[in-house]
Image 1: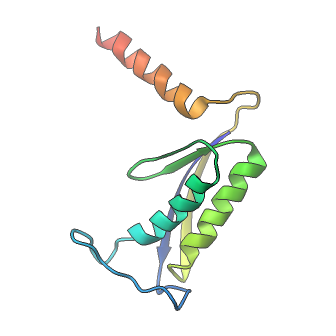
Image 2 (image 1 turned 135 degrees about the horizontal axis):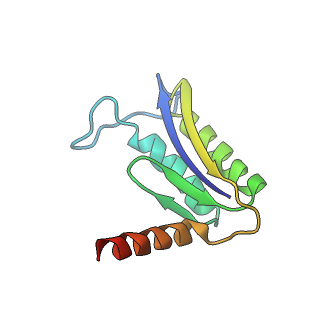
Image 3 (image 1 turned 90 degrees about the horizontal axis):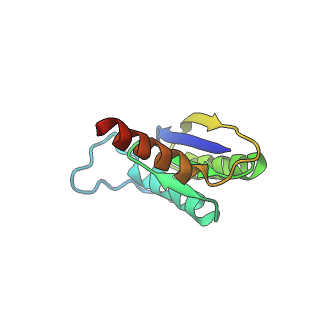
Length: 115
């Protein structure tokens, strides 16, 4: 399966050791530190991943993926008093490598239709 998910903590950090800092170009609504901490959990999982401007995708078996999403959510929760989780899953038993394969097939179709 592939899960695409997005996390957004809000409120004051639940972890008193955390202090928010705003880098150049960031505003008060920025959650980049929380997202970075969550993405680190995903990337350290060893599962195939991809991060874009709005979602992080992770591919694996159901239990593996849900474990990673849960741990990433818990990490992001340290940065707020609540967390919003948006999750979309493509559950396709017996298929692997689809995090790359789906994009490759799409790009080939775009090229074919552009000719």
